[in-house]
Structures are given as structure tokens and as C-alpha cells.
Image 1: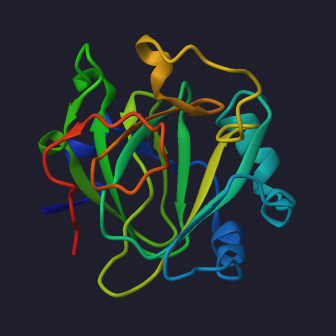
Image 2: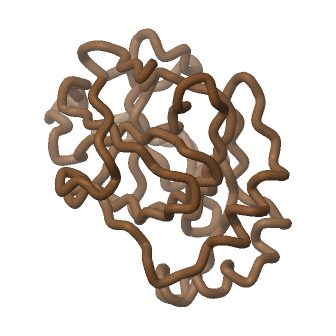
Length: 206
């Protein structure tokens, strides 16, 4: 799969580079977070949220909405699924990582999506990007044989377990957690009940 730079004009429809906030302390703190052989995601980590950047992102990026800072770390080379939120997501590279992205506008009326429409971008260590609410994304991928560490910043409670039952009709059948709509690939190894709607290859960056 062709890997583009995050500075490539093709990225502009998916998000933008965040240049008005210093994320260096967060990048340094990510080095102390676990990076297993698989993928681990923690939506809210108190040590990361204790950093000064927490208040700055709350004010400048989310307009004073409550936020959470967590991480997605590990080793991964496959797409497996795509998700979206009703809000932007900030990704901060604690290491180099690859983001596979798509557009929500390309989801069909029956909630399928052709993975051939995806594009991949290299997120360099130390770089922060805002991924727009209309951008499909999932776990980052590794660069070469390295493990990745990426900070994930979202509105508070995103990706936490749902409180209510959902009727599983129309778009509601995609919801798997708070503020999280997901479309899985048949080869993605997802939990039973996940909506399987990705058509085409389970993209691989290795």
C-alpha cells in the first residue's frame, strides 16, 4: 500500500496538522506507556491528563468541552475495521506510525465501504494531527518492525461502554461504544455483533 506524507495535499480532506500547541511533554510521557505485541487502547490516562497540554487542548481545540487523553499502542499492520465519531480526534505520534483513512461520505446507504478508497499516511514522531469527524480511521499501524505509540485525544467518555440498548437499525447498528460507529472487515477478528461492512482487501501496510 502506498504511504503518503502527512504534508501531502491528499491529507487535507481528512484533517490538518496541529501547529499551535506544544505536544513535546505528551510525546515524552508516551514513551513510558506500554507497547505490547498486539494493540492496546486506553481512552483516559490520568498521567497524560495531568500534563499542562490537557488544559490547552481543552481550550484551543475543543472550545472548552471536557476531553480525555489516552493512547493506542502496539504492533499492527492491518486495517481490520473503520470507525468514526461525531467529533474530531487528535492523534499525537509518540513514535512514527501509519494512519489508514477514508471518508464517511463514501459509506453506502446500506453501510458498506470499499477499502480501495482508503489512503495511508505516515504520522511522524512528535507530529499532532486533527482527524475530522467525517474521517474514517481505526488503530494506527506500525512502521517496519517497530511498535507504535500514539496519543488519542477525544471528547470525554468517547469509546466507553454504552449505557442504553440500541435498536440496531439504520446507522444505529454501527454503534459499539459511546460516540463510536464502526464498520468491520470479515477478516478483522471483531467481537460478535459488530457490523461487517468493509468490502475489498483487509489492507496491509507491511
